[in-house]
Length: 303
Image (cartoon, rainbow, N blue to C red; front, side, top):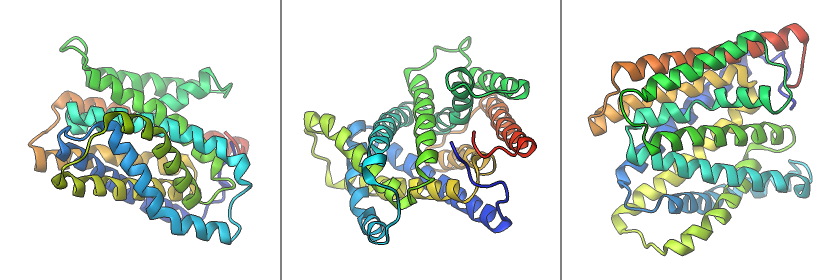
C-alpha cells in the first residue's frame, strides 16, 4: 500500500500529531460514555446509533466532496467501504463489551495493541519482509500483553479476549483506510464506512427491539458525535503523515483513559498493568521506528 512521501514537511507532521491527539481525546470520551451507560443499552445497538447518526452528521461533507469531484469511482471503493464497515462494527462491539465488563484502562491498552497484530499479519500472511528487530518488537509486545493479562494470577476474562479481538479487527480496518486514503477524502471514507456500519448493525438492532430511556439518549448522542470525530481525526492524521510518525500518538489512549477512570470510576491499574503497558508501548514504538528506518534506507514508498 502506498504511503505519503518521505519528504513530509514539519508542518504536516505537526498537523498529524494534533489530529492524533484530538482523535485520542475523543476516543477516551467514547469510552467514558460507554461506561456511563453501564450496559443498559445493547452493545450492538450503540454501533447502529453511532453509524446511523454519524451519516447524518457527515452528509454535508460527503455531498460537498462529491460536488467537488473528490475521490475515485464509487463502485471501485464500495467493496472496501463494506468490508471496513463490517470490521469496524465487529471491533466496536468487542471493544464496547470489554469496556462494560473490565477496567477501562486495561480494555483500552489491550484494544490499542493493533500495531502489533498488524505487523504480525504483515509478516506471516501478507508476504512483507520483516526484520529481526521487528520480530523482536512483536515478541516484546506479546510479552507485555501476557503481563497485563497475568494468566497465572487469575482466570483470563472473556472481556480481555474481546478487547484483543477488537485490536485485530481495527488493524484490518486501518489497512483498508490507508489504501482508501490514496484516492478518497477523509469525509467520504468516514461517511460511507459509518453507513455500512449502520447497515450491518441494523440486523441485531431489529432483533433486540430495545427502546432506550430518555436518560440514556445524551450518552448515545455523545458516543455518536465523539466517535465520528475520532474517526475523522484519525483519517486526517494518516493522510498528513505516515503511520511511523502518527502511530505512537495513538497510545496516549492509555494514560488518558487511566486518568479518566481514576477521576470518574475510582479505578487505577495496578503496577503490573503499567509495566505491561510500558512494554507494549516500547514494542509499538520499536515497530514504527524500524519501519521508518527501513523506508529511509530503501526509499520505499509502499509497505
